[in-house]
Length: 144
Image 1 (tube, rainbow, N blue to C red):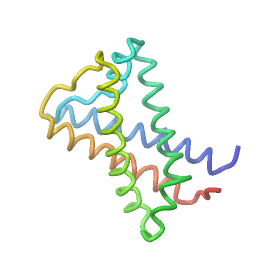
Image 2: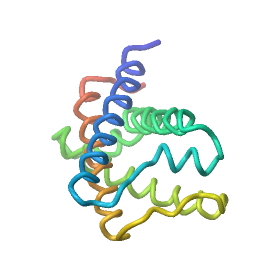
Image 3: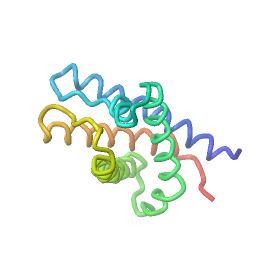
């Protein structure tokens, strides 16, 4: 396994932890509760552990996507943090499309409670944190 791949996987795990921690803290500060692992598990009628595994797998896949595809599109941006912000926005958009598709395919998918605007803002913030962590952790990796 090459070093860039392993660093990307680790970046995806750490960034998913950071994003999840932000979601938990923001719920304690009055933002709507965001629970992607629970939502995934309920949608598939699976144990919560399956939802957590899927949540982290998506984080790893997105980190690999950043290192091996998206970072190459952002060569005009010199700052890894700014690349991460852009990547976080891209990940947010992909996540919203994915959520809409899942909602259409799985009628059992629970609907998040609370203000849709605050949910969108919280999700965007979480994805930007995710993107920045991935970009900073993966800045020394090479993609082949």
